[in-house]
Length: 73
Image (cartoon, rainbow, N blue to C red; front, side, top):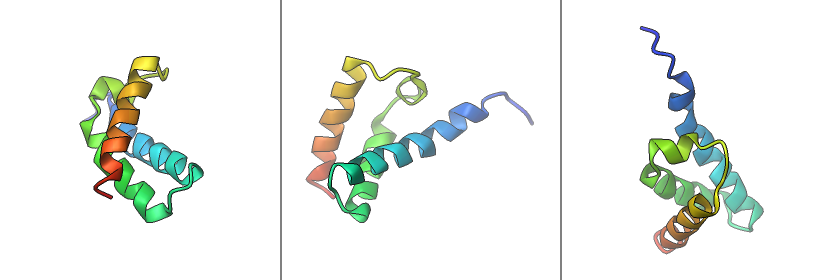
């Protein structure tokens, strides 16, 4: 059944991959970057994942989540 929500379904893996790539770019090894992204993305809301703009508030939220995830990865 078509729901018109395919973009919503793709947001999770796209954001996870973008976050992991950003972490690799910041110097993390690939496995740790994937771990961090895997820990952060499930904590984001559907609205966060669908945001067309990275606001200061969303950036701060992601930064807090990344810092927290780094200790466990």
